[in-house]
Image (tube, rainbow over all chains, first blue to last red; front, side):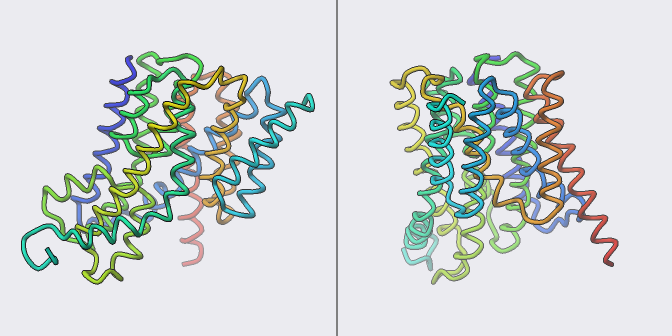
Length: 98
Length: 243
């Protein structure tokens, strides 16, 4: 499937979610589905992170990078610092032959 | 011009625009990282920018960029799994819309326009800063805040996409590690409470295990839904236990 077609489908489903919410007004969702929507980013983000680290041929270096980056993010909540710190740790491990 | 007439309130628009400027520092590096990942995955400069203009949802754009990586453009099944993940990931916008529309009556046209630019950051900021605005929470303030982030996101995407075009082999630069790091930056602030930690752990390891037998896009979709169901079960059970 071509790239731009996938992008337009992604746009359609995203716009629909935004428009439907703004249009439904006073609908009350049951607590279960409110909780479900709250947990979606947690499960999806974790499902993207772990295989990308542990499933990589260079998993040891990446693990060092995300461990350092994760610790920085946990302490500072600063996205740029976490990415740059983790990237630096990854490169340190790579240069040291890990 | 001051909001009393039927004209658009540019004053509120400007204040909404400015209230988001401090958040640019957060979205700019993320947009650049997204663009570099998308370019490394084989998307063209214009496809990379098209996604930022249309989808305009950071996490799902980045997730999609990661799915393109390696194999280039995916087949139909993988593409549909990718669109499914986008839908699941962005379904939370329904909540923002519900919440906003309760406090700000919008005409059909206003809904159609403001829906395109609604994001987590804008929702959070407008809900807090909007009522404090001299004109109260208004369409002008909302749209100003939305377009502020849109401008920053798309400018940074374009710059990142152009930079990605001149960068050498992504493996040589080690930019592959940027993808998990960026998502860790989004995940860490969400890890509040034991249920969230458990969901993250089960989903992460589950996706790694399933990734050995199923294609990546489908794994993210299945585990995304399964993990969120688990979290909803745990948290609503616990709430009932307390009641």
